[in-house]
Length: 232
Image (cartoon, rainbow, N blue to C red; front, top):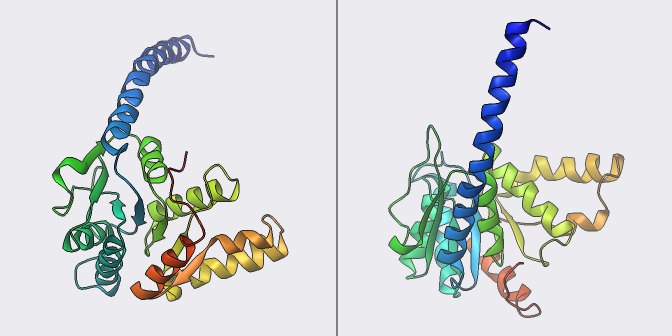
């Protein structure tokens, strides 16, 4: 190995190790801040979706209506705190006079705190994994609006946690059958039937609806036989 390259690698690795040790305290502080802010928040539903969904789009307006109806049932609304479907959900919560939580993250583009978050419930994170813990720990249901890579990341992480029973059985709702149909077909036909990488009953973890009324009716029915409690 070239000596100059070797020395450069060793120096960079040493600096990285020193930075990583101090980074632990930053991670801890984000967990503590989140736990303290949300510990007494009460039953909530986390709503995920694209930051690029604009006001007037059918999925934006549907997210507003779903969040409003869910908040009227007594649930708080948790979102990623940014624009698009997240903004729509926080807006719906405020229209109903419900709790409106925003779990924001610093990104180089797109992400900024929307104006519909309760002032005392707006949090900012640097780490995606800490932020996702907050989405899951304080939610008694998950609603997935159409979205991109970030929404898919949250979708599969939540599905995995429920499948593996790392969290309790929890409603997981996909909104927009046209949007989700292709993915669900692939999960059923390829992931489940052809490759047998999941069990048939895992498909039952997912519910798909197109209207706010269907979403609210499902949540009502689910919690007639299940107890509201923190996830872990």
